[in-house]
Image (cartoon, rainbow, N blue to C red; front, top):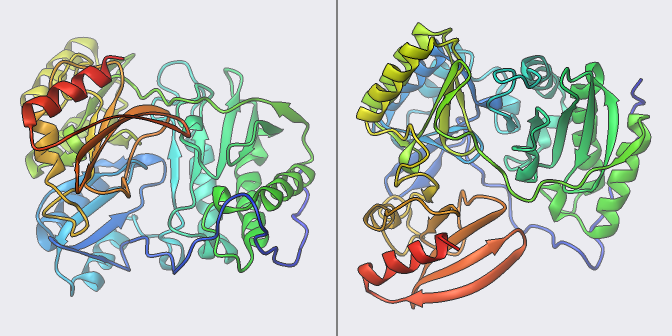
Length: 427
């Protein structure tokens, strides 16, 4: 049985550890649009990445009616609409509310939940009950409305894929039936065992305790807390969970589902996370034929759970490939990502999407992510090749968790740049 979190005075950040954020949380949502060079931007939270076909159709309608028609997948399994008019906010909110995509105006930016996209499809425990209950609890908590748009919950089916993403609060299904859960705070190596039925409430209480621990410090995420405050948060959560501590280090590298067939489900990845209206419509129509659900992954892919009969799955994958989607691991686009770049973002120093496309070659061992500036919006986690545009050229680094090994800087030579990236990815 979960104990209630104790009330406590706000804890300011102390010297050492992480630094407090400065300025307000400007993370975009659907009610607060973000101005970009290509028009306003809306970020629609899709908890767990789970969409019905009707909701997918509503998003396409919104993109066509208010934006540039395209849909952009994010590294949290959300959807961004770009090229929006600045006056569309009310109509957009109404459309999304009618589709069930905006259940609480106060919590729309707090509904950041990623989930293992193959959960329940390949012998792993299903996560649907956790996802539904956690979203309900978040939307029903007045305190949770104060969570920043960057605070992240993760629901892992035990395989470690989304546990590796470094969420602020992670639930991990334990055992093939998921009869118990492990609760992780940030990247702590000690997790707490709680009954599966109590897991969503434990996750919410941990988030509410984070808000108390952060106080007026300006911390948006667990990693922003100083070491002593973060350790106190973990102790408080452990005390309230009334469950034993278990030593379980977080996986260092996330392994996304490979594009193709997974049991009776099909998976397609999206080059640079950018979907044309025709591609989105094709995915929606395919989902309607096989159960009516789509799951957006944190790796800018889409899972159609099915069940899809194997002969029909092969034909569906061929059709999706013909539309330009990635349906096999040996695609040159596998593992290639990029931020929006120029001209969509004023801070970008280059059109990194075009550069990434020009440099696409044989698939590499490591993913590569192209960033138009040092912010690296949407970059992957774990081990990857980091290509950042600087005033001096494209800097290529090898990232392993928190370690960054500088490799080389390439100046104004597309052929040499492509070769250097390919060489780095093969390491």
